[in-house]
Length: 113
Length: 112
Image 1 (cartoon, rainbow over the protein chains, first blue to last red):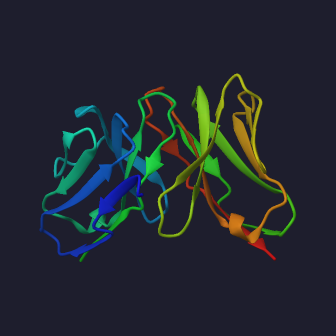
Image 2: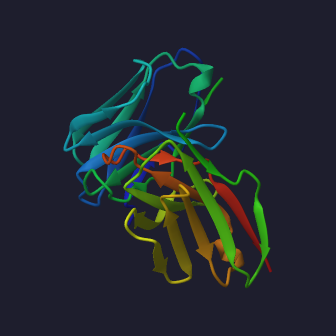
């Protein structure tokens, strides 16, 4: 039983395209996140939703738009992809905000050519 | 500026020895600190959380210490095994809102 699942695992696309990454969690958690891991392996938070409400929105270009249709799903849509968007994107969830540990998916490796 | 620093070089140790990984932070006053393990091609997996009023936390062969004066956390794996080989990440939440900030991680290699 996969707790946090992301699709697709790999995404190769050309500059200028629009793409989406989907995430689902079956843990019953209230809070979901998108993190980006760059080539230097730093994990940086992008967005966080709590019960479908956006609560964290880091300095991320407007081309990135998260959507949470319900508290078990958090999707990430990226418009006009650029070379610098190439990275691994991780979805995560936690029972609540505060000190709760995060449960991560296995990532989506995005390569923009 | 705010920074979290972990050993950038890989730590190579012999099976059975104790591995000690360091996490230093600057210009943060976190209420707690977390440690995660990440295997290649996988997402990080939570290991331990230690709060500012706790000096030490243990879980099986794992031990974490937290020194808020030194602004440092140490992560120990005793009786290390090749299966412990992975990247270990420390993370802290500067605003107590689960906006975790991660270090770049330390690669641990345990040789048999």
